[in-house]
Image 1 (cartoon, rainbow, N blue to C red):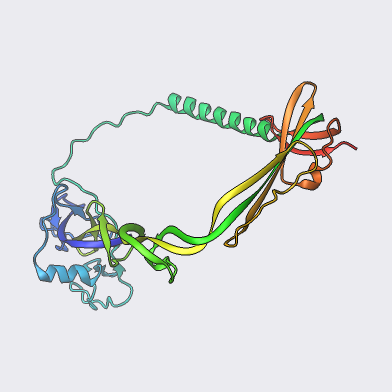
Image 2: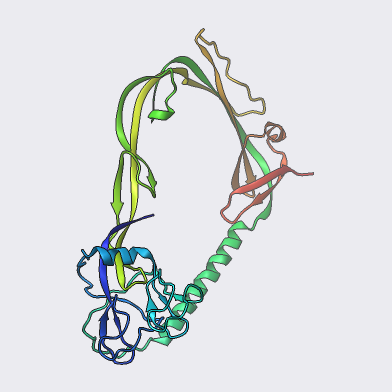
Length: 327
């Protein structure tokens, strides 16, 4: 997702020495004078609203990069500082750069009244875990039983077959596609804008869709208010007409013997044969129980003489997974 900036807001930090809340850009406690620790967390002033900064200097500071703490005295300095403003030490190397980019937690300025945490019901959690474990085990057992096959001796009771041939004709065909995917020789009938894909970057003919704004710590005591956005790109989707081969008919021939045939077709000058399909069904009897096995293998089907003995593999659902003539 793309991150969209809405503006900048002041943050606060709480002095660990005296609990005083200080403005984010202030680098030492306004009450006791203690320097801001390098691991202090900035907080949001108002969890309901964004009071955007208009001070260009503060905005430039927020954009300059996170502050850094002097490795000698711990004083917080701006990102571009080469010497500590308090002790004068060289901080061009070795300084601890403040963490930035994290979402700022929305906290109220007023301290909240502590509450006693509720005790978790350990017995309930244990019972729930046991039940889930049992269900998982039962599911595995069921799956194993379904995948497990049994060998069944059966007799061929009946057979039937079907063969079909599609008939195609060359002529005008109506179709739909994106404008840039339409064949060059097609005649466009009409187009309309339609959602095509989502992008992380702004695109032409895109609708911006953004989530709720939130504040990100810049590491300077100033927060950046941002939104995560995607761009729904719309494009021309068109109906068109093109000359092409298309199925106009399908002729099927069926039988209940071991001599399947293809339909005998008479084609017009502008027609041709299309896709051919063949389907063979063998019906077995095993001690009064019937099984059906459907295949497209003519060579196997040719052995299915009524009354012949076969060996079947049958799964837990009663479906034949394989079949072969008995030796």
